[in-house]
Amino acid sequence: MKLHLDAQPFGYEFDVAKTALVIIDMQRDFVEPGGFGASLGNDVRPLQAIVPALQNLLHAWRQVGGFVVHTREGHRPDLSDCPPAKVNRGSPALRIGDEGPMGRVLIWGAAGHAIIPELAPASGELVVDKPGKGAFYGTYLNEALQVRGITHLLITGVTTEVCVQTTMREANDRGYECLLIEDATESYFPAFKQAVLDMVRAQGAIVGWTARSEQVIGALNLSTEEGARA
Ligand code: C5J
Image (cartoon, protein in one colour):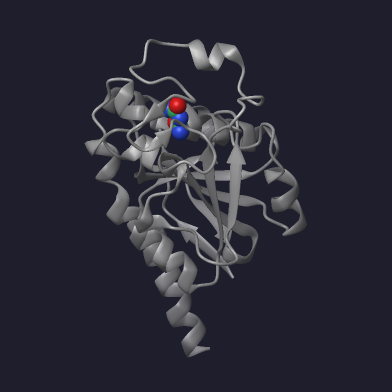
């Protein structure tokens, strides 16, 4: 069944069976104090504030049997998949691979690399480990979506202008119709988030659409009610 949202800059239509909910990098290293994000001098509280909206959206999406993709940014323990340019960039208190309060920063298997417990992946959901900012670079995500016939992506997570925006642009170039969920994505910099929302939907949805989580949940609830009446 096709669902319709009054998205920006104009209506967005999607079919749950051909759509994936993509949750980008809701990892302890970005969202919790003591992680990589905090070590770069960021206040992580704005990122924590989107968790309830994401939980509600995830719950509603699971209820209708929608496909879920979680991503994690991180690297192999020997850093063989992490270019020195990435390790050396900026002047963080902790670099990628350093031992921090939540284990080695952004390293597979470290406590900080894990997805926050509130959004823990459920069985049957895809978890994609990505070495870059975009979820398509160096991963099998495209193939995993293609075999499932996915054409539309509902994109959420952190941070809006880094991994979320990069992933959305990569997806757009691969032909996916992408909707960015406004209240289920966040940046350490409010102005950057707003800029991404504006850029994505400018020029007739040049990268995609935006809408709020309650609009998606409302459309899903309506479809369930209509399904029950039919
Ligand atoms: C960053 C991300 N900001 N997930 N990663 O380094 O946005």
